[in-house]
Length: 499
Image 1 (cartoon, rainbow, N blue to C red):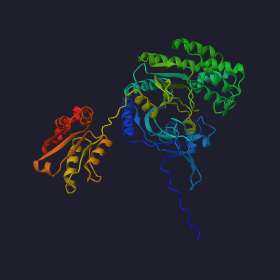
Image 2: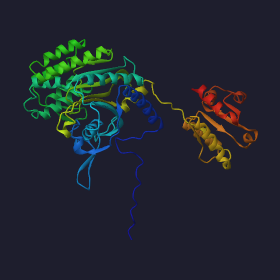
Image 3: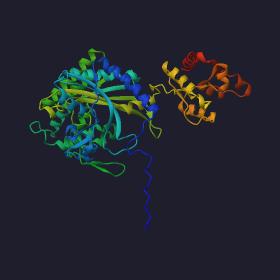
Image 4: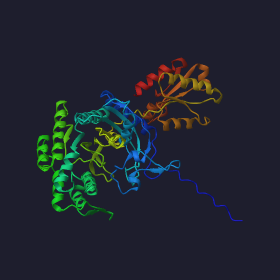
């Protein structure tokens, strides 16, 4: 009789491009998002939670990674009706569906913010995950570029609220209409037939968006025949002539010493394009609105190199870049880079309603911003673990639970040790791994005397590194007996002293 082949055990690891978030990660993320939400709330934005799964038709095909299956989304076919659904790749496309569905019940303009995970079916790599968190704020139904200016101002406030000071960031603003005007001048956009040269324009957009990573030479190669990277992989280019590429490269190099000079240079580049001139006018208006509110070039600047990779932007686009230096994996200094971006997408809701609905918004890359705060030592969350109530007598579990309940009722994190209490040393090791500031001890002796022992683990660890004799250890103040009735007051005092 043939042996039944055993099924191999599953590997205890997430799929490639995914990861797990533990206590400190989740707590820090929540603390950061709470501060951002306060800023959005002050500006009159309301929270929205939409479905993580949308129909593929509702999501549309706007991701720049067009070579991936299903245009870069995780999608599957429903058995019931044969329709396709997918995990959302951002929080903006679902907003368009929500607004189109509920527009008769929502105010116009509708101002909302949303926070949550998104998924992209992209090739994972170092620091590049297929599930990540975004934090968005959008205004739907406002055609005025005052809405774009407000989003930029609000983004500036949000960065400062979480701990990124002025001088450590800059918000760069451009306009897709200006870029389209440049493409029209370069001969790769025909206003009478927008579908013409569509593929070439997509390649140009993605090439410009990679300027920081590839440099001018790499971008020029992608504007032409293509580029081979260090691994030997070849990326096909847009096929532009040298003269056409010169026009696009001139656009990318159009930033001048100040906003007015940059705007004047852009007017020269789009001469002859009505769409391009309209985009320059909008940039001028945004700059004036921001300047009137005190958002000068130390916070927000006009920068033609910003294009944003997603295909649904129709007007102003913006990107928040952190300018301080960090060390890369090889110990070389580099700027941290972009942590947020967005823009105007006036045609996204129109897909559902057939009517043009103006909209604009921004998305913060939550994981990147959190990494930036950590790099600067500005994490927001309290990493202190719970006070640990140890178990000395198994049959007195109710007493220990009552102690923990008393502390929790006063707003103090506390838990009772639920492992095997036989080895007291293991309980203290557990407290150390949990980051517990205090351990509460009440054995039969303490119970008979009406006291509990409070062991200050934070102070104890500090003293342990300094104490050299047993006599000093016995005299150290990191452990005290206090009356049972004074437990809460003593814990409060200890926690206050330890910060």
